[in-house]
Image (cartoon, rainbow, N blue to C red):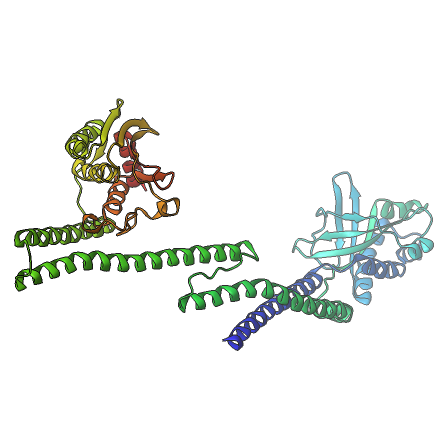
Length: 513
């Protein structure tokens, strides 16, 4: 068995370790994948594009070209030459060129080498704060540089670098003062391959280090948690094996997480109940065999005496046989009733009962027996609410309790019966000055066949009366209890039953559930 338990613990540790490692690898894989995808789909930094456009802008010597035109060239001729110059520059540099006029209505496109904007169409420029120092050193005095982005009508994103010239020549001012000359390139994005090429070597070592640290941590965590979980589970498994072998006294220490402590406590409660049930079954077999053997022995003995003609008084022997047979019959009936009560199959009528009147009727029926034994039987009651119950079954309970009180009280003693309202119900207290009940036997007086007085000979009862009484009271939603100060200190029994209104509320609550 021990090697099997070790293999179980090892298997649990191994499964925990594997699960932690799988979880760790999945987490690292998700993090790495998300990181690369985010890096691969992010816009590339604009600064390199700006610098490239700034370098190309230095080659856009547009003003010098215009200055080289004949001085007698008119404005229309100059305007015709500019698109050709911009288009030639765009083709030679593989860049997009635009001429934009700044007006009060906004920037208007005068020329677009990509033919995306129509002449006179408004363009929305998003100007960035970026400035190129190399470009600033070569620009004519008073000129401005602009960098930013825009979207063309097709929805594609572009980055631009632009210039705004200022010149003193009047015929040139018409072209340059309110004009913005732009070079543009598509806004770049970083592909996943580029990301892997740029960052793969940089990200791989941290990921590997994280994986190694995670593996070490997973091994330690698996060992600790498996120890914390496996050890209590092993104790429960071992205890279960002992219980299966018949050791019902085994107890499991409650330790570990709350769930395992709850498991240990539940297991201990189960073993206690199994032990109690086993003891009750053993006592039941012992008691029933004894209670059946005694009358059967008497019947057999007196019958043999009658057959042999050895009986001094045949009539007395026949009476004993009759009484013992009746006792056996009562025992069988009571066993049947008890079994049906415990199974919930014994039918009961439900009607309104005045418990004070029922108690008085039972007391009156037993008054003759009490007077014959010189026992004072006293009954007192106060107004009580009606209860819903089976009157015959409750009379059976009262007959048993009050009859036992009279039976076990010596001559000159007293039995008091009191009925009163208590805790939204009716309580009946039966107290006697009889032989009492030892404290260690109080908890067993309602067991089947259990009898406190085990030496009463032929006058002994069946030992089922209190067990049946408890089942009847429980079936009515009530409670029964026993109290005693010990030997020769008398005994007290209390029966509590819910009032009719409370009983109906319970029935409604059960139906609603």
